[in-house]
Image (cartoon, rainbow, N blue to C red; front, side):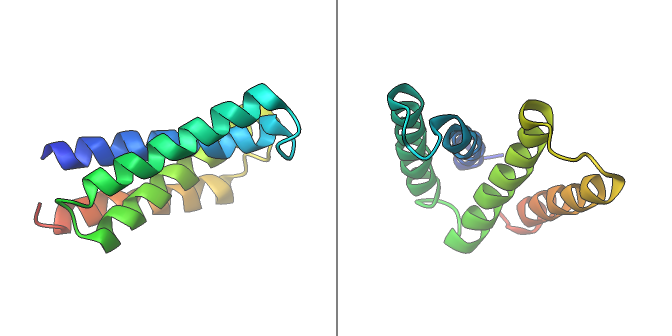
Length: 108
């Protein structure tokens, strides 16, 4: 796996951080969580931009958003008592399969 994929995964993790940070910032009304959210967003975007220097933008964006969606949904269950239904777990699994599939067929 090329370094671009590692950069993309880290970008996705920062996407999870800023998405969860939105909840903690309470509509950007709390200064410290708001600042952390903005920093995580900036890092996520910069890393995504770096990754697309060597990866197809469509693949990279889909993987980035997939990591963000799955990670945020899992943390929503763990941190915010969101529902953890079998159907939800199944569809999160489908997203993970899609992420892995895009990596496998990307040719990078």
